Length: 411
Ligand SMILES: [Zn+2]
Image (cartoon, rainbow, N blue to C red):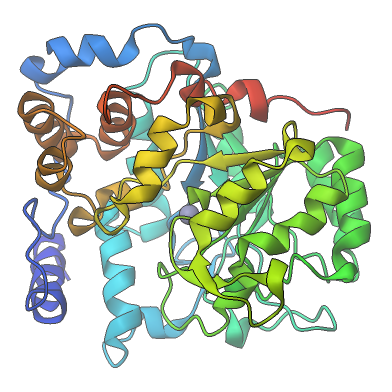
């Protein structure tokens, strides 16, 4: 299939599935132009402003997904439904991710997704780094891997080798399922090989962070000073999640109490759940409220962090974003992440909506809309730099994530 055909198919199927409910003002399809930023954007006054008062050597993006389909020797495994038109919910998401990453199925998704990412990252100043995420498979209660229940598997080795191609620009975050028989051994091996942190997505990998079976893993993480980047809140990026309870933020008290530095992806800004502090059937509250509760527990001050990836998506523009901007006393504990390639999924972000809610002025919204057409990674960084709410902005240190991620006790 030619790329243009692929892209128009994406548009058509997206229209069919989403169009009736919501019409995105920035379209459905990432245009993925080749080449450099036009001069009027590169030299724009707002472009100067986004780099002001920042230490570029500390600009670490904590949350970069590796897009792939296993069409090279990467070892990537995808749920076959993602590539089957018989399963539109899976297939549509996959097409969005491939287009968001400007990957070309004909030329090889693994290879062209990496080319696309390194092209976008090259637009950042020297010193800025991007941490790519590995993703372990689904494992059962006995620690047995089950690829048939795995949405996607991105091997540690592949991500490590990608990062090694451009070590000044890229780093990597390992993913190790804690119930595997060799979990501790592998965790130590990943740390020795240079992994900056460990990533879990509990609902997709079948991990209960509150289980005592994680304790030995937590002890090893704490001993090495290695952070755990863990999704909390509901997860809709992958179709077919059945066990959203595993993403309950209060389940993260266990690693925190075991001395692990925990970075909560997206600051848990999605979904609701029972207040587990009042029992398994406690009243329903938003997951963000539970994140806030943990952030305000003084004993977790040096341990608990939030990653601001995805918090500006169109479905999350309410109280959570206002609170994150207003709570300047939290800013030294927030780290920037892009959740790449999601900034390239066009319907997920709307500059019109951000301007309508007064997070951006019209000039900034216009600049960002045009920037997004050329570089979704730079767009993601720029729009969070320009965001404001009642005079509050994300402090520069939110973007200087290296101060938190580069800190490891010993290996
Ligand atoms: Zn993510």
